[in-house]
Image (cartoon, rainbow, N blue to C red):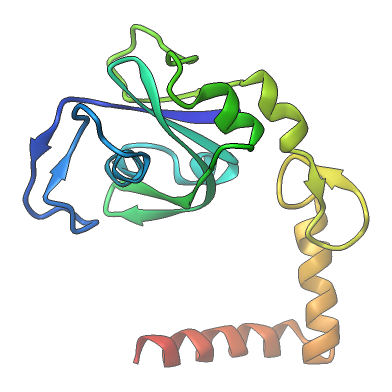
Length: 176
């Protein structure tokens, strides 16, 4: 599945968590401007948004930008996507950039999830634990723990407590 974000009309904003002074869609906007306007901040499920691999930004019922999602950041009760714009030559870009919104619907919600036929083959990736399996997510089911346990054994002598203490200390140093 991909996430589609539909932009409304251009409007000035103040106090935007992403530092923007405008949001929305305007004529002749660039793909970079569409991504900046569309990547956030929205009411959406952070885990679900981060699990998606691709995003379409639409406005005036046309696809203005196509991006690959690398993460999702929480801003109070809203989410902003992180990622990179796709360019000509990428199958999703070639199929959708400048075309009619393939996930158009009558919902008032700007955020929609849907399947794009070209996306299926692009979503298969190697499991991040290194086992050699393929998956649509970062890890095959249950393999997150396999990867964590391997690192606890490798770097902390098998001590989960030492691992947790290291995380706590690292985070404390990062915020000091």
